[in-house]
Length: 375
Ligand SMILES: Cc1cc2nc3c(=O)[nH]c(=O)nc-3n(C[C@H](O)[C@H](O)[C@H](O)COP(=O)(O)OP(=O)(O)OC[C@H]3O[C@@H](n4cnc5c(N)ncnc54)[C@H](O)[C@@H]3O)c2cc1C
Image 1 (cartoon, rainbow, N blue to C red):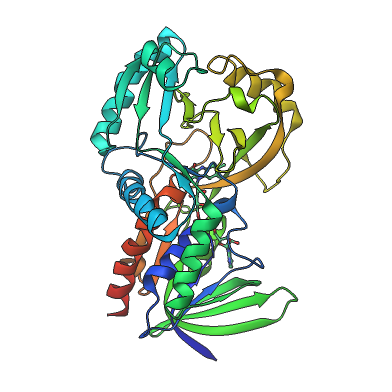
Image 2: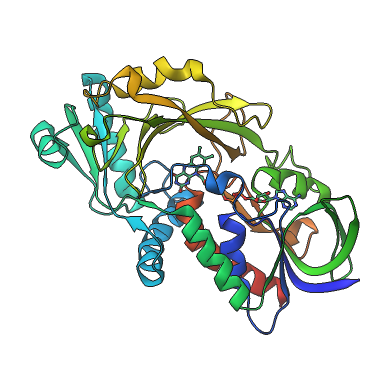
């Protein structure tokens, strides 16, 4: 049977960042991924926004890792030629009611340490983005956009050059605690099973992270580790791109724990609108064309030049949430489960947005837990 010091389950942006931070010559590090390439799930199906840390409860892991990830992201992208744009963002109020909610949002952003966030009026909005119509806005200069594929490629390269191995088309199907680590069963595409021993297991399985925790024997319901799927759908802007803003334009967040349908300018001159968020029982990657009117009605108030025929269904992704419909939001879980009798198991559960932004900070955070677990 093969033995590794550290097994990372999942090659999304989080698993790859962890592998890049953990890999070194003294350790055997293996990443197991069920698909035939990295980043086939949430990490390549998102808005690619570098968040500033505006929305999260102060002192939450989401808030802290978002802020640290934002700073690390810009340095990393500049140093390694990963495409990015620090375009800034406006959270725009188009009604008096929305305007009345901006000061509370500003206060949360300031408590989270988001840099340079301030309220601006209609004149300054017109100067920054002449194509946008709004009464006032929260200006967030440290927001931006990143090439998520380029970021994952960088982490994968860094992990491989540190000596890690990444094995694709292998799904982890069982995890058993044994003396000095874990016995892992993985199933290859064709159905062949293999076994492996690891001293430390890092669960970065995203939408599958709750299942991995359950395989190990944790009670996923009492710990709120069960994953609920939240589908985020996008529409692409097909025409009239020249009349659209280059900054990220977000609405004042609706009262349903979402950020609302916003503009997602990409790094190659394209533009999407989204996501429209809805709970889902299953992973169905089709985009409902009947959402056309809803997308148009959501964005027209702040993008007056938008026409109904300018947009068409695009893609969707699923967020891994630790809460379901009607439940309060819950923070990321990133913890070594030694105190629960699972010495050597490090769980990352519910790494929803801002997980992409936070990824450059999550790797070093988990590396400290791994070093402790290896002793
Ligand atoms: C619609 C949407 C919009 C978003 N927008 C943003 C944004 O603008 N900014 C931001 O910061 N964040 C955003 N996010 C969040 C961000 O995309 C995620 O937090 C991040 O991608 C999570 O990365 P991950 O590696 O944990 O998960 P994933 O990318 O899902 O990776 C997990 C990997 O584990 C593998 N896996 C699962 N089970 C097993 C198993 N049993 N065996 C082997 N492999 C397994 C999967 O195949 C997958 O490759 C958004 C997410 C969505 C869905």
